Image 1 (tube, rainbow, N blue to C red):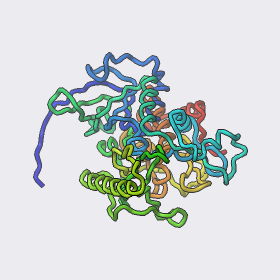
Image 2 (cartoon, helix red, strand yellow):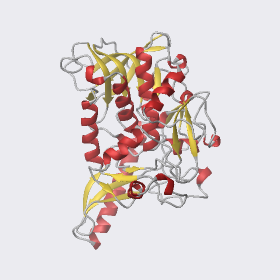
Image 3 (tube, helix red, strand yellow):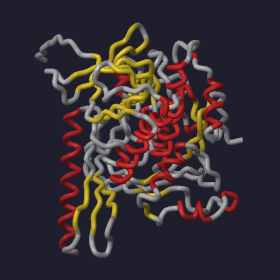
Image 4 (tube, helix red, strand yellow):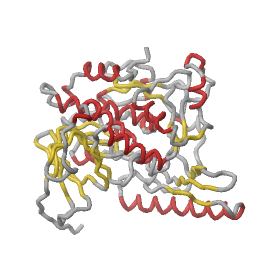
Length: 428
């Protein structure tokens, strides 16, 4: 293959105590968590954004131009359960805050949220509706931006991570590309700690962390919203999401839009994936217009609906085989959205890199033992749980004079702070 080489000087535009890469649900939770720990109300003034090599306490860099990731731009607008399906809530704090935060904006009362607020938890059983809700994606994104700004988080949109610089086994700078006055459009952020909430483990992959690909492959999905006289705001889930083989006997597989599968990190494949989705939406729209002339598309997903792509490899991954098992380093509980009665304690070891001291992950790219666990852990409540823990840990590491990396962070101190926020660490 023919290659070219370039050398360039990249300006360092700011210094961040905590840098969050990716503004999906995991990134929102991580940035909010870190900012609250660092007392965002008293943050150092940055005098006009990221220019001038100013200090920023928490910086969230997002390559799109709205927050929420798959949950908003991807239209995967189902805030899946905070409960175990047996009548017990397991995910709390920011995971619950964001669910309740979405409700005044607009929500679909067909899901179980109304049942949960109408009755005390003691009255819920294995037959009760689960603690979940649908929400408005665009309004959620706008309100999330306001929430982060109120907590002192600096947001930089249109910033695509294109590399990192390391000193030994520590990331010192993250390199982004964006619209810029300089020729290359690249700029660097000096950082103490970095939270990879990119979904694709972009920072971890660039840093040379041990990662794995979703080699089974994502199948195309084409979700869109419509409006008509009889249904003013409706979600259509063409393709939905495939069920892992381990769960295939319990959950029916969706109708496939194509035989194509992609791992989610190849640009040409993603482009083909998007075109398949667009074709499916247009076909569905034209068919529905034959039956209903006032049927109109309101919005389509503006990012590919890739569920899984890269994940961290660690010695202590999340593992669905450890259902109900106590983890000494637990940083929260997550439930299985597909099946009642499954609860995992999230080990801190599944979040941080063993090869890069100041890198921690959140969301769908945390370490998982297998595809079945990955499919369980990739959804909104789980992203919020891991995001809150990662953001808090990043803030603590940045302020610590003792810990040289996340592996040396005082886990008891982290757990104490999480419990003070209302996070439940163990089922007992």
